[in-house]
Image (cartoon, chains in turn blue, purple):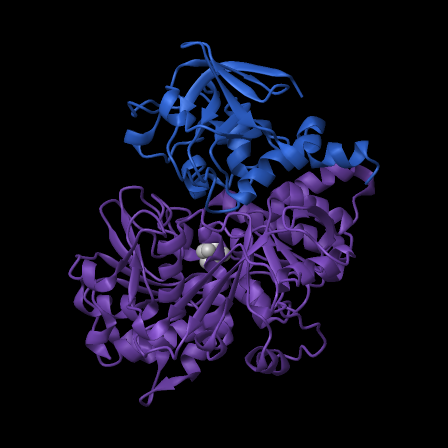
Amino acid sequence: MVDKIIGKAYVLGDNIDTDQIIPAEHLVYSTSDPEELKKYGHFALSSVPQDKAGLPQGNTPFIIGDNHLSEYSVIIGGSNFGCGSSREHAPLALQVAGVKVVIAESYARIFFRNSVDGGFLVPFDSIDKLNLVIKTGDTVEVDLTTNSITNKTTGVEYKLKPLGSVYDIVKSGGLFNYARENKLI
Amino acid sequence: MGLTITEKILAKASGKKGLIPGESIWVNVDILMTHDVCGPPTIAIWKKEFADKAKVWDKDKLVIFPDHYIFTSNVHANRNVDLLRQFAKEQNLPNYYDVGTERYKGVCHIALAEEGYNVPGTVLFGTDSHTCTSGAFGMFSTGVGNTDAAYILGTGTIWEKVPESMKFTFNGKMPEYLTAKDLILHILGDITTDGATYRAMEFDGEAISRMNMYERMTLTNMAIEAGGMNGVIAVDDVTREYLRDIGVTEYDEFTSDTDANYISSYSYDVTKMEPTVAKPHSPDNRDTVRNVERTKLTKCYIGSCTGGKITDFQFAAKILYGNKVQVPTFIVPASPSVAKQLEKETFSGRTLKEIFVNAGCIVAESSCAACLGGPSDTVGRSSDGDVVISTTNRNFPGRMGSKQSEVYLASPLTVAASAITGVITDPRKFI
Ligand code: SF4
């Protein structure tokens, strides 16, 4: 696990469900074939309604053209991020698109577990409503050792909630690594 | 301090005496269920992570139902079913229910109940968010992702956070024009889509004790729509009778202690409740049917693990009998067993299937179908500009197909009444 993540922020609203993160019709691609895997990145966040895509203005595509990599590596969400269908393809799609960390007010349980146990990305809980103060395109630095995020564009630092009991799994990079390190498997 | 039913089941599964909500525990899993969408990636992770040591922890405890994308010409979807088939053969799995054979069972959550995998007091994990459905049988059941499922597949264990419990009590006798779907949509309006996140939702009260198992499953099924970890209803005579009929006789019954701790409790008088809908685009966007009456529709849909059970079709048939539908109306039985019952059960001298066909409905083969959109050739899938009323569980943008469609969620009574008029209609007009 790295200690610091610097990247551009992509800001979303409340209740971003997994159908918006990766629409059901794209779940048919193989996750073990490297070429097909790219499709998940390509279609990441493709079902977010246009006016809510990249707040505050909206209408900001997460992926441009045929790419599977996004220019944004930090997602700032509102409450109940990742609700809906349990698909692990959701955090996977974000990871394939290059997202390293999601910061939201709260998460749906299965999305949170998937992000942590699959080692796809780090799901932090924010304390403030960060999606109202950080803008899409702002450069942010997330510090995993001090549980904080700094908006490099404005210079303001915000505290995040510590990861708590899942910190060890995040640190190991997922459930299997954690289990091997602790001789559970 | 007493314990809730959920805490008691998890204590047993983790070999602990007492538990505190919020504590992380390792539980022993009784059943792992997977399907065609999440099965192949789960198997791939399991093979990669355990490498040469990869061995299914207990073949009898793994249950696989292809049910999501099965009647399609989409090559990728068909490949997923092939992968399951191959895996079942290679591992010699006794509980694989292949599509296209006599063993095919339809939508997983209904199949789990019908095939006797829902055993009170046990712990069931599934790679599907609606796995919480099984909680209607006094057990702990919840959904997990592929990595967690792969871990269970190899070890039979998984970590879980003990949930706080919320209690929902429904007093009174259900009026004829209400179904369990109205109750759960009502709750969703009250607590919203994250009101039960990481929590257990426990249901009880007179209206619940009078409900059959299928209606109870509608309540526990949609616990996840409030973010719930699990939904649960204690075993009673209704449960015992259902289980006896399908040959399940040995199980542990747990009930919540009277001094158990609930984070919140809600109490409703069902005689004062109204037919309810969730408006686009969220299951918690509650309104009464009356308030949205005369909304013009282009499609009606009765199906899914939430609204495609035999009881849902009994409700719908009661309304559709002798009437004609004004808009395309899809009848999608959740399982082949439900489909068979449609041909056997009668209302006023006609089979339910006859009633639907005579009304002009399209009766499809049992599967998840358009409940989650799916490939473009999926039956009932919503298209641009559609306004759909559906007995399914989710109406997020694009969930049933097109992002440019609107979906109202409602009870089978309300959907049937609306099908007849072509606009959203209060079922009381037809009862
Ligand atoms: S019917 Fe719908 S909600 Fe139920 S398992 Fe299938 S896709 Fe999921």
